[in-house]
Image (tube, rainbow, N blue to C red; front, top):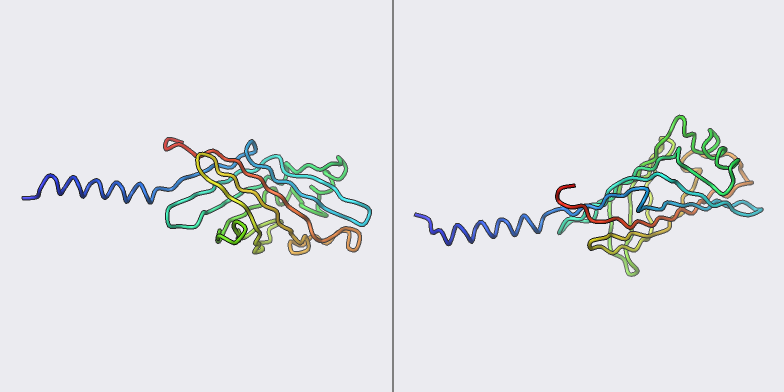
Length: 183
């Protein structure tokens, strides 16, 4: 005959192990995520971003954070209406053919100054490995911030050779609330 005390202790241990392994999720939305960029040329620079971003950051004990982001390229904006139209066209993002870009992390590792996020970015149907430094704090709200430099030619954007810099600075700032168990 099994002891009720032993069974109770085993049940508590199983619940504790399950609770430790539980995943905490943070939903990225347009309201809590900023994704902005700066493009440069010899005569100056242009600022812009994306108004619609969605995704998920998942944290689980003993595992690296997992980050997935979907970027609605049709929601691109810039500091110049004609430039916005041009960036959405075939010379740059070709949003009619490629309305969405995606990022999926492959690792999120601690560094001396915060974290290094590595993953795969798919833009214009081309998937490129990317890595960039970031800061991250978590609790009821996760804050993930960072800057990376993308090389537009890596994705097949060749318009404006020698007139537009190939490097584009991308900044992100996420302030996402923890999802409740019923979300």
